[in-house]
Length: 344
Image (tube, rainbow, N blue to C red; front, side):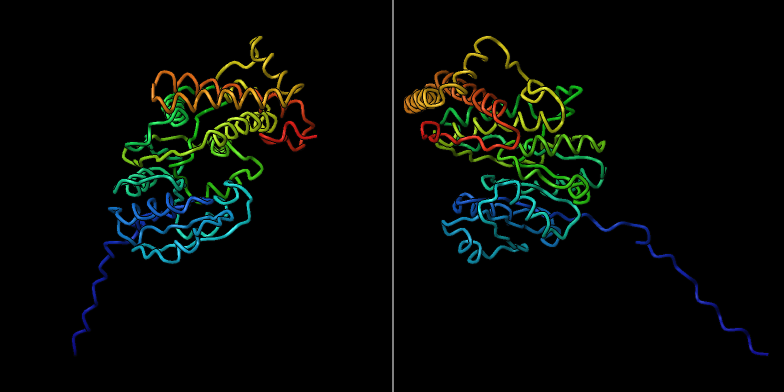
């Protein structure tokens, strides 16, 4: 009687149950900053992770400086795609890029960052360990980009308030948006960035992530270098918008503006300056221009204490103005931009 045929042994798959490595979609909003963006994209071509573990998506918000032509000419080793909007703001550009993402982790990067080779790897490694986190990358000023007061005060603020260093009941952590990452599902769950905010979308987005129970990890190896560039008028406008957005976020979340700014706004001098903005907007605009002139002079002589002092004055005066104007306006009303205050 013939022997039965031998049964083949079933060898367990050594890879069974092992999740494939995470991949990153890098989302970059931009508008009319083709040269800065090009350097950022070139730096991403030197990442240490395998090229199939990242893709880059640019959300272009209506650039007319040749940004799209530059993107068409660029030939990076990684997958690059872009989407176009029409002046809808950086929040909309971030969301549009994220909607095109194919990978599990979204790295939000600004268009003025020079990335180090391990940036993507560092972000992904943290998410491999824990899905319920937002990863804050580091982005100190790049060499040679610390010559203006606006850049110096931005960097000082970033270092002082980034991450969960001083959590409060109202603010679990402060997210800085030029270099951070989150799982794509978490971005979708909170509904993306609030596109109605011209500034501080990163702070408000981070607060909603904290509402989900996410914690923040500050990862120093997720490093980029910030080429911060803003004109005097642009700095004034940013600070005014910052104040306006603090009021909007305060109303949306039912928390005091002071908690969001991490400082008082009700001292007598603060109330006086806010009143000037509301009742004499043309005067306030003129005074703001004068303060901007002082900062311009301080930048020309490059006396760092004077630059820091002048930039603090400009920022504080315009933040208080934005707060006062937004508070005095009916909810949802459009607050005039700088240079519009004296028009009838």
